Length: 108
Image (cartoon, rainbow, N blue to C red; front, side, top):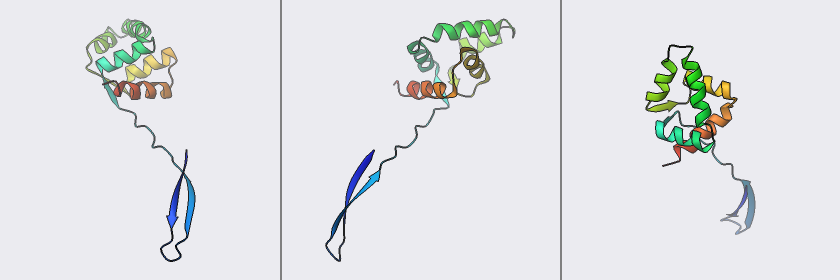
């Protein structure tokens, strides 16, 4: 976005108009979401049932640990290995995960 500003020279009285670019600050990606926010975002993107299925399948290979973690966590951490696994199986990119965490944080 381009904006303009006036510059007033105190000595000469001359006024010049200068254009400059406004660069928005990058959005900060939250490192965790509450369980409720994470589940709402997954539902928004129609991923909740898919994620539950992936976790259930993973739990069959790890003695149920993944299912216990998923069912009982109070927060979802952005760099949790289980989340990375679910993302890789479902084809979610880092950018998509970041977007979901940003949107989740803004819910309430």
